[in-house]
Image 1 (tube, rainbow, N blue to C red):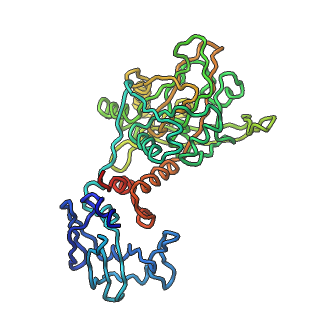
Image 2: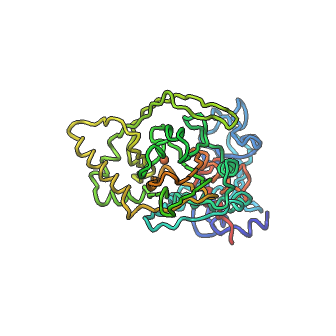
Image 3: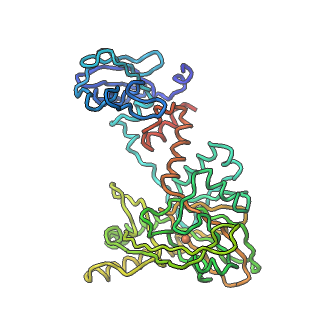
Amino acid sequence: MTTLVRQLKSAFVIASVNSTDNGVQITWKDGHESFYHNLWLRDTCHCPQCFQQDTLSLNSGEGEGHDPLKMPLNPVIQEVKCDRQGNLDIIWGGEEPGHHSVFDPSWLRVHCQKDPALKQRRKPQLWDASLSIPHFDYQEVMRDDEALLQWLEKMVELGVSMIDNVPPDKAGFQSLVERVGPIQQRYHPINIFTLDTANKLDGNIHHAYQYMKRLHNHTDHVNYNVPPKLQFLGCVEYDNPDNDKQAYSTLVDGFKIAKVFRTQQPKYFELLTQEYIPTGRRRLGVEEKVSERERGTTKYQWETYHRHHVINLDGNGEVYQIRHHENDRVPLDVSHDKIQDLYAAYQAFTALAESPEYTAEFLIAPGQVLVNDNWRLLHGRTAIHNPSLKRILLGAYMKPETFRSRLRLLLGKKSGMPNMWLMGCSDRALEILADRMNA
Ligand SMILES: [Fe+2]
């Protein structure tokens, strides 16, 4: 523990502690000052009476240490100090004499309401056609948590990455996806899908192979209530007798074009953040092969309708999600006085999404898996004009919570903090904690 304290950055080391009327004032070694209200401190007490250290949850049974009905609204501190390990140590008085709370200093620092670092959002790095896709090695991300974390952090930054040297089969592809977390259940009966230029059945199911012409940039599953966060596309086979750019993948940074759109055409931008573009799917008899062992195919049914904005803003007015798929669009639901402007706005955004200036184009080669953030990027494919071109891709999706969960776990592990203190930290707090030690 002593070693740990010595290695902590000064922001996580308590310099002095003072008790005030209703709280505790802490001055940190980096000069920052924090204030914690007594009720907040008492409510977050992590002692075994108040907090179940095995299940990592509040011990709030009747008459237990953390019964909210018995929590004094004006808890009184009898004694407060920074203990030898550097923790904040409080002995309570008043209605709970002798109740003892010990708080980890790093945890306290990432719960300081006045620390501007906690309010900073990690900004995505926007890109255009000149994107250089970051590559990661399959074996490294499979065996090394630090490499896995670097990959997932790159996904937050750029929304795209390529994993090389993946065994070019279903098992290899699945192992990579599941290294991050469970594959998302789709409305199709199977979760890992195959795009095969030679397979007529696939042509019935996927827009991606219904036409050999260019597949325009789009996001997937716009008609889900919550669209998948990550899309994995792994190449099993690519054999192009013409040796040109047929069936190359295309990607656009939706956040980048939204920013350009916002600057160049603010009225249209506003319309696409406020008006709804409905999408839907109705599939009653499409056949799909459910498993390798099954000889025949299974019919499945799916019927959906969803109204959403093309550009979705968070509470701070920043774009957090793009939903754009022309193939899935259904009749517009817009007043007559707005339809021309809305359509013009939709056309203008679609043009940006297809603009060569913003479209990166590249091949997913056998043994490579492209991972893209489906809330941010639009993806497509260049045309296939030679029917003898062979291309087999495997695809799968991942829910936002699954991706976020793995990232949070890895950040927590890197911080070296006990589970008891990691549990319940915000994403930003975990990022800061992961970086709390001096190099
Ligand atoms: Fe797609």
